[in-house]
Length: 302
View 1 (cartoon, helix red, strand yellow):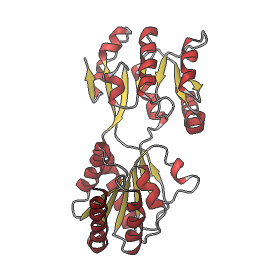
View 2 (cartoon, rainbow, N blue to C red):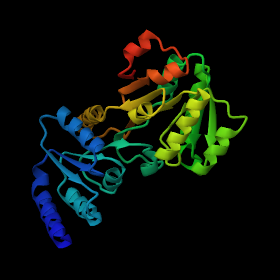
View 3 (cartoon, rainbow, N blue to C red):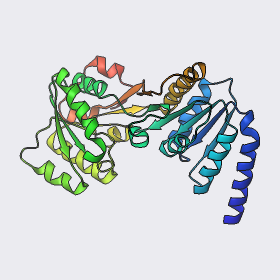
C-alpha cells in the first residue's frame, strides 16, 4: 500500500511541475482540516479570475521538499500558505512572485525578527478584546489570564498596556505546567472578576480548560474564550473567527501585493471578529447583558 501511495505522490509532483506554470495561484495547506479548507475557499471566492492548484503537506514529509523545488523552478503568480507548516515551507523559497500566509497564531514564532512575507494572523487585537469585555461586563475590572511565559509573555504585556487606557487591570498568571493551575485557583489571592482565555499550548488542553471553566462557574466568575467551543461549554462569552472571511482578507492582501510587488512585508490582524454569548451562564451569574449587545452578537445561546 505504501508503494502505491508513493507512486501516486510521484505522479502528483510530476503533474504539479507540468501545470503549475499555467496556474495563477498555488495554495499550500498545512493539514487536511476543515478550517484550512474554509480559508482556502474564501481565497478562491475573492479571486474569481484566477486558476488555482492546491496541495496538502501532511501526508508525506518528503513531498514538501519536492513541492518547494517545483515552485521555485516554475513559480505561479502568487503562492498562499494556509497554516504554520505551509508558511514555514514557503519561507524557505525565494520565488519572484508574492507569497502570502494565513491562518497562523503568533507568526513571530515562524519568522522571528525578520518578516519574510506578508499575511493574515489569527491573533485578536488586545484592544478590541478588552473593549468588548468592558462593554459586556461593565462592572468587572480585573481580568485574569493564564499563560505560559515562553510563548505569550509579549502578548500579555500588550494586554496589560491596553488595559491601562480602558480602566481595566490584568491579573496575569504565569504557568509552565497545567499542574500549577489548581494551586493558583485555590489561592486566597486569586481575585479576577473575569477570566480571559488566550491561545496557549499549556492552557489549551480540553481537560484543563474544562476544569478552569467549572471553577469559574463555582465562583460566579465569567470565562471568555476564543472560539465557539468555549461558549458551548460554560463560558459566558467567546470571540471567534469566520475562516472563510479570513480567506477573503487574505485574497485582498494578495491582490495588493500583485499590484505592487515592492511593498514591505506586513501582518494584518483579522478584521471581522465575531461574538457568541451564552445567556444561560450570564443569568446564572446574574449578569445583565444589554439589548444592544445582544442584538450585535453574532450568535446567542439561550
